[in-house]
Structure formats: structure tokens, C-alpha cells
Image 1 (cartoon, chains in turn cyan, purple, brown, orange):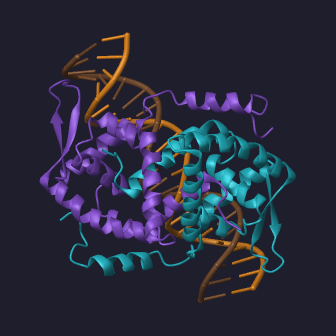
Image 2: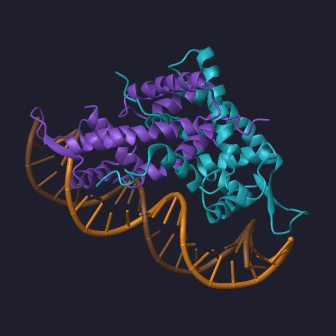
Image 3: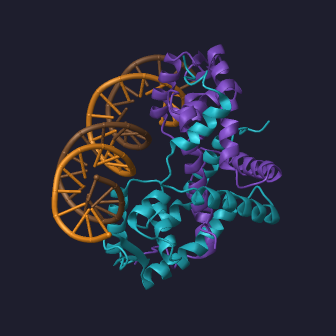
Length: 167
Length: 167
DNA sequence: TATTGTTATACTCTATAACTATA
DNA sequence: TATAGTTATAGAGTATAACAATA
């Protein structure tokens, strides 16, 4: 019998498996895994403002301030003024940040293969493709949107009789 | 262009998307998402001891003590003495825990469909199947194994010249 | 008036250390 | 001696509140 009949359970298991396997590669970076993801966004020119970054990576904007501080101190990213809106700080990668990203990226490909070792190479590509589409869909859904909207959909489906699952 | 060329980034995005979408369903449970997963293991008779549960769900055994305390107080699980080793407390589900699990489980299926809305139904099944296999593989890999073993594999592949990605 | 980013502060979660009981 | 579980304590991570600058 499978030990994971639940999507959330399986996601958590795989997420932790990846986190553990990538530790040796990412723990030396400022901000660890999250720091790498911010650098990654900066390298691809999709970082945007700090608030946008914070929303995309699921943390408070104050946390992003500290993280960008560390990344900037390490010379990996830069805060740039946004000509269109002087309140924003656009986060861009430095040359050093780009070089670091490329080096780390190669080692992470090995980590990914290790995590997905239970699948054939073809299946790995298929899985990555599907996962990416789910992720992109989640990313498209406006991160600033009211989180309750999702809950409302679900409540409308399942009814209001069992709102309190405990009592 | 895709916003997620990286497995870890995509996993994080999907994981947070699921966490956000399941909030309304799971936040009222003791221990939230993790509490539900422990109940789920207990319902399926695969919970085992508290240490085993802690390892499977990626937390310290002390955290599991507190969590099981809350679940037991809520009447959802029970600590049972293990005849084979009196040090162990085997965690089993109560009738109430089983009922709760079934109710929540139905609502979570809707959440899952919402998270995977970017895929067709066939693709959703395919994705879940592959994800489950990756998760089972991660679960099989002895959770007590030395985490450094993974790092050693990776270092052997990528060489030792760039151990410090920053300087 | 609302939003971005910053700082100081408070809170939540988790781990460490020390202990008992069992093996 | 080593491990499961518990408790008290300390630490890491994160959010809240208040503020200045900008829209």
C-alpha cells in the first residue's frame, strides 16, 4: 500500500526530501533556499519589487527586507530605483549573483535527479513539466487576491454544515 | 516564459498554494495540516511510534509530543502501549478521529482539484501518480539515515572546488 | 488615503538539554 | 550504553506596529 494517498502529504514529503538533499548546496547562501530563489528571480529579470518578491515566496515584506539586505551585502543582488514609481526597489542580479546562480544551478540538477530517482528519466521530465504547469497556474493566480475567495469556492461545494470539523 | 525553471521553486510554489487553499479546511484542527497528516497515518494504521511519526513529518520528537497531546485531548487519537517494546507509544485513531478524517478528506479532494486546476483530469491523475511515487521513494529512504550521505553523492559529482558558493 | 520599504518589538514555532523509563 | 517519551528552557524565524517617503 502507498504511504501517501493525500496530495498535501505527498507534497510535504517530497518538499522535505528536496530540502534535505539540497542543504549542502544551499545552506551556505544568505537566506538558504529562499535566498537562492530570490537570486533566481533576479537573474531571470522577474524579481520586481520587494513586496512582489515577498508575495511570490510566501513571506511578510519585512522578512524580504532582511533577506535582500543579506543578499546585497554579499554582492549578489542590487536594489535599483524604479523610475515609474519611486517607492519601489527593483531587485536585480549582479554579475557575481549570476555566476553564483549558474554554479549552484548545475549542482541542483543533480539534487533533483536524486529526489526523483524513483522515476525513469522520461517520467522525470513528464513530472517536472506537469509540476511546472501547476506552479505557473498557482503563480498566475494573483498573489494579492483575497485568500478567502478560494475558501468560499470550497465551502460552496462542500456545504456549510460541517464548518467545524472537530466538534 | 515559465516562472519556474527550478524543481525546488516549483515545489515551494505548489506547496504554498495548497497550504493556502486548505487553510479553511485544516486550520480548525489541532496542529493544522500536520495534525491532519498524523491523524491520516493513524487512520491507516501506519503511524507507529511518536519518533517514527516525527521523522516522517520532519519535526523534532518533542514537537510530536505536544502535537499528540493536543490530538489526544481532542479525542482524535490514542496512545497505546507497545507490547513488544514498552518504551514506545503506538498512535492509533479513535472512532471520532476516523469520522473527522473522512469528512475532511472529502473537502480536501476539492482543494486538490482547485490547486491542480491548470491540468486536465487525466493529467491530474498522472501528476498525482508520479508525485506519489516520488513521495513513496523519499519515504522508503530510511528517514534515520545519515543526511550527509546525500551530500557526499552530490559533492562527488560536482567536485570539491566550489564548496563555498559565495566567496 | 493607500502603498513601499524600514526598523523595533513581540510572538510562534522548533530545537536543545536534562530527566525518567525501558531495552 | 542506547533509545522513547516528557518537560523546561533557549533559540530561530516570522509577523505586527509604527514610521518616513511616495503615489
